[in-house]
Amino acid sequence: MSSKLQWLEIELQNLKDAGLYNRARTLSSPQGAWLVVDGKRVLNFCSNNYLGLANHPKIVAAARQAVETHGVGPAAVRTIAGTMDLHVELERRLAQFKGVPSAITFQSGFAANLGTIPALVGKEDAIFSDELNHASIIDGSRLSGAKIIRYAHCSPEDLRRQLQEQRSSFPHAMVITDGVFSMDGDVAPLDQIYAVAQEFDAILMVDDAHGEGVLGKGGRGIVDHFGLHGKVDVEVGTLSKAFGVVGGVVAGNPLVVEWLRQRGRPFLFSSAMTVPDVAACLAALDILEESTDLVDRLWENTRYFKAEMKRIGFDTGQSTTPITPIMLGEAPVAQQFSRELFEAGIFAMALGFPTVPRGKARIRVMISAAHARADLDQGLQAFSAVGKKLGVI
Image (cartoon, rainbow, N blue to C red):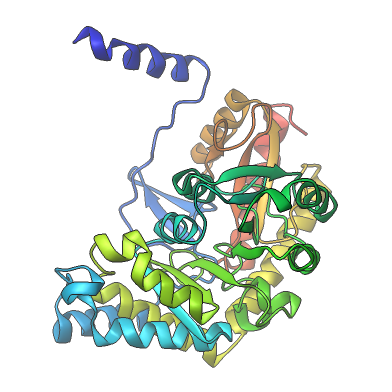
């Protein structure tokens, strides 16, 4: 091996020695409550498929039909020859669903953050960011060149202190928070954060990736949950979790959306969402607007599973959402726990540094409306057995 890349071999070995090396398992079945993983049928506690829509018959049929009528790839960026009527319809429907004037779609939620943040603030400006914000927010903030000022997690008081001390030094300021924090499952106090942002004339942006399809009436998200319609400047979301497909969306102030059509770099320089994905997202919206049954079932499953895990003796952290972290401490323990679960027929991956801080490794269980009560009971039994075997409970 060339000496100029030898450091990579050393660092990879260091990851393996520390129990931090990621080994991705391979799926050979559609997403659902049960999966075939590495050739084994297992109960799925890993996916972000909150409502079980990733393999819903109506969504599969919509994607198939769109391929017949529109083909597959858009073959261009949106601003040249990549905007199809389905893209326009999806953006209209998403705005309607979210209760906002306007929306724009991106290729992913990650791309939405990378495109939005640098378009709204620059090197003379400041970003006030929750210290546990998602990696895509961190990367988008770095790309913007703005000064990044972190405030204590979910603390409107610390946000106010930071703004009071530093807001006057910058022509523009943006406050950014996740809506639901993906590792801990807690919800940002968005109503209080809005009040502070208003007080200091700061743009307010929320990344609602894990809130859409979960929080609010019929899964309309964190803004609906707090009754803040028309008050949040930028709502970023993803179509790859509760919607069961792929893609990103920015909704809210029509000026922001219009500006992103002119200056959002992933929108301008990367091919549009593929046709079957767009059609599938439209079908997901149909399902969400028809009934709240799936969202209701998701929360019923969540309440049951969390209560039982706590009764068994597990620490589920601060989560108040279907995201259920099983706190285990060190990464090697979490990885061993995950391997033992897999042997017992449960697919639940370990998360360690740098995804979460050192010493806070965990198994993150993702509850879904697709789970039957028998599935949850089988998972609970396996967690209890492995927890006792490893001395965790």
